[in-house]
Length: 422
Image (cartoon, rainbow, N blue to C red; front, side):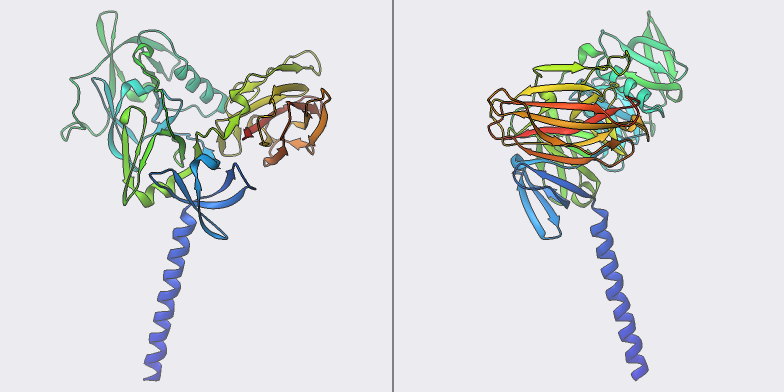
């Protein structure tokens, strides 16, 4: 009997351990990200969800807490999508899907493991990347070409480098994904100079929809960018929480999935709040670059100094500045802000090369520039370092990027999420 009791205790104990492990795995499945609030120091936390009133639920080592979206600069970081299909959206975002089901009328039918089968109005979609290039710069150029395209025709970009322009031929408008339709789109038909041309999907790098038919949304009221682990970056205007959670995109498009799956996939949240102003949204009062030899380097807003996306490690950054040594960039603050914050790192394009020192100078109203911050030597491949400066009463702010170890070789400094806080 004693032996039986011990065995029972052992089984029960193993069951408790197993339940504990499952619970730990459930918690671990939710990504941990840095929480940057308008007030207070950053901290690490899991995202538990966002409610209909835009309260962000977080769990840190000190327990669960809520932060109003208006008081949150961001949580987490965006990640890259290196696969297709990837819808490039008219609002500047992107939606990763598993397959394109149909192009019909004024909508595109897509399917993903997270959202199931959904219909997206074509006026919200600038194009589709089917096969993203492996190189970062080529990938950025392709997405940039789609986002900035002009003209009045649809364009197919082929993997052999050819470009075909015409008008997309589609069947009658779909009411919804059809049960008898093929599992995925296999070809695209363009009307080119009066005749139909069938192009197999496997030969297509990207499809650019007629830019004249695109309708970029104008969003008012509270909204936020939501980044997912599949590389999606969505502009959401409303959240309907519950076991089946829905998020609303511009033009009333709704995506729905179970709450647990959604919040496990979210890796980034950036609310639009008047308490946060990004330097990249302001016009500088001056920029000057001093070449090491003869090559002049520009600064870029929301791009690195090469013109590509701001990218450090596996993470992308939609907001920030790209600068090169040796340069100076200045802004007028007029005493309107409380703090300046950013994260400094050399862009992924620098690899393990590059080395700079970043300095920040402040003018508190007497016309004299005084040192406010000096970084250690920043080198390629290192993790970002955080900067937080009190700028109460500051009239002007200047950022200086200076040479360090090897002249200006690959000195691609990124000021990630460079922001002013009210």
